[in-house]
Amino acid sequence: MTNDSLVGRLRSLIAPDERRSALTAKGLERLRAQLRECAAGQGGEVSARTRAARLAETYLGLDDAGRQQFLKLIALEFGPDPAKVAAAHADYQAAVGTPGQWKAEAALRTAMRSTRIRIMTQFNAIPQGVKFLVDLRADLLRYLADDRELAVLDRELESRLNAWFDVGFLELQRLTWNSPAALLEKLIEYEAVHAIQSWTDLKNRLDSDRRLYAFFHPRMPAEPLIFVEVALTDHLAGNVQELLDVHAPLFDHRKADTAIFYSISSTQVGLRGVSFGSFLLKRVIDDLKRDFPKLDKFATLSPIPALASWLRHNPQALGEAGIDFSLAQLASGEWANDREIARQLRDPLTRLAARYLTSAKRGGQEDGPPYDPVSRFHLGNGARIEHLNYLADTSAKGFAQSFGLMVNYRYQLEDLEGNLEAFASSGRIAMSSAIRRLARVQ
Image (cartoon, rainbow, N blue to C red; front, side, top):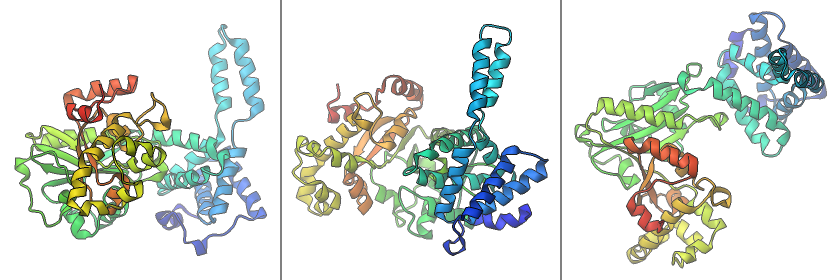
């Protein structure tokens, strides 16, 4: 099979169920032989490409159980040789302090090198091979939850993907209404924060008072890895429905002094653990400052996605905040239709959210990272918690996640480095005085 004949299969990457087959005992032995050929790495570049293409074709043709067997075979049978590692380690221990120490160290490093990655690396040589590997890891992550023997393969593949997707290799692009239709369709598909409801909705997010930037990898030019949506305004936005209103008048972007990042979406499940979001925002800020010199305020309008989840594990926090409603009642959002109830809940809900953002820790550890994943991301980039917005997202998702509350994280450029260092070294959370008062944090 030629590389060209594989391209069609790799475009979809996931073959329809009716075209997939189980891995039989005979097929397992044939697969083992294929993997051994790849691990041996014999022959030249053409041979390697042909082997990798055949192996990818085999993987794509398997059903879900077969793919799991495929990955487990690599994980369990293509690691370092324990006997060679033991011998190399003994040689190294004997050589410590002698002129032969560094040579023995290199030999030990070679002995510990896994052939799993040699197999995986060969997929790079085939068309769309990098995308194939990213999607293969997405499969691996699904299986990993119930099959911890796959963890060793996941660690090695994550490490390699971190190297391949180093931010130095990524390209920042601004996407517009004139971008290819296939790429715009990907934005609709991948938007993870505020679903894009229609082409009209997408056009509104790409208008002259908006910007949308994405990171691309040169080996995946048609696939945005992560993208951020920006609104150009003259105030700290506090309501996402107003930002997304397709009927709202167009803002004169020449008067903008504030950039609001209102949606950041990672698109590739297989790149979990590969972090480039912080670099995206810094690059976007530089790009915006170049195009709009008047911009001097950069902030988010962010969801608080794990607030309701945290309360399910800490229901006493509702009573401590003076809230008599159940979690289910709050998450329904029906109370917001009653003006008096909404007025009464404003202060206690806002205080509850402030305490959650400033005090709730992952794993319940006092010195642990913030419980909220969006908070971890922005605080880890040097932002500060600036302002809480009541009834800022009145969608069903907004009520289910955080009872309609949203938060602004402020990127004060001169404070980013200091905030980041304090957060990384001691867990100190940067926050405005208003948030500090709400949370009663000393």
